Image 1: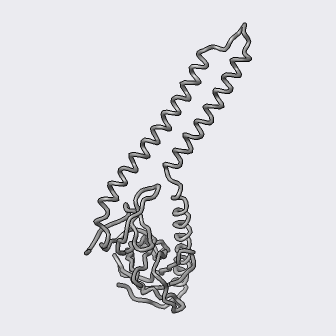
Image 2: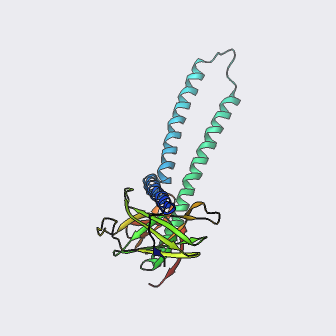
Image 3: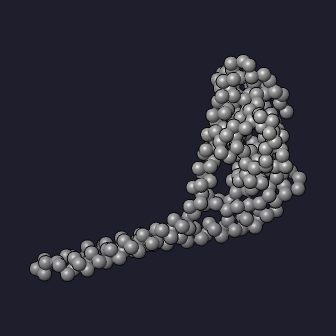
Length: 247
């Protein structure tokens, strides 16, 4: 665990300012990523096939027109037509291959989803800036290279700063917990929040410290980039999970 320290020193104030900026950036980045994930690979493949069909119809129209108006004394070589048709066929095969790969990925994710059901109800840790607040509690850990003041900032899903703290870290792994109470004293509702930690490196320069959050798995969701684990309203990539404890 870590202990709180005063933020009156200029160094601590500077770290806190950087932590606030980083937390806001994490919230904006995650929100943007979540919005873009609604565009799935299957929809992209369908659009590609639709576009290819339209382009091929235009090609046939141009080819027919060219044949109708070519110079009889100097007709276009059939080799040119054959080459163009072969190119279209090649593109069509590539698009179809992508479609088949999308189906294969979907089948793989279905298998992972089935296997992942066993994770529901377990407490897990994950390398992430998304901090789940569940049952009024949130917790995370970070690793400090040197002992000294470390600034922590938490924002809500809209990027509004709701909690700040400056603590004294020990060298190595440090844990920090939050009771869901904001700086203004308001008890916040469970949901997805974003955290950032700023400390110093061995040279004394300010540096961002990676965070490992903890939470209870409540479900699984499939996105265009893979499977995500749900910790309440917080969604974290399955690949970011580090370990489990209990049921």
